[in-house]
Length: 162
Image: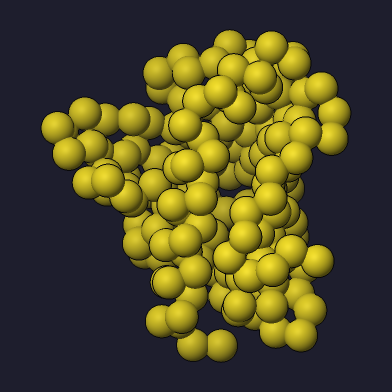
């Protein structure tokens, strides 16, 4: 089992990236922090001067989400998708599409939350259209961004009540 705070990244197939991190918090709190705009704005991509300026979520199968980050030089980065599956508080499956084409093709993201002894293992599985796309994402600063976001999420979770 992964220790709290350690981000593990694996590539179980030629089209997938799987990231796993254990949080010292109950699953319900992690799910809330992952799905409530007021909580997402506190941790998702908010490092190095970036803020999550737009966070809209219609949390239901077929519902959509929209995120727009604003950088320290007023640059924007937008992302949107559709919720394909929502099982509270254990699983979320979405599509992912950036306004700027960081990669070709599509991505399906699956977040699974598993609780054991008051700790929650978050597993994020990203499935791309091809190995080339997956490899280009792996070469991007994605790992540093995910790690920074999850570190901030861990701090946010300490302020939430079970």
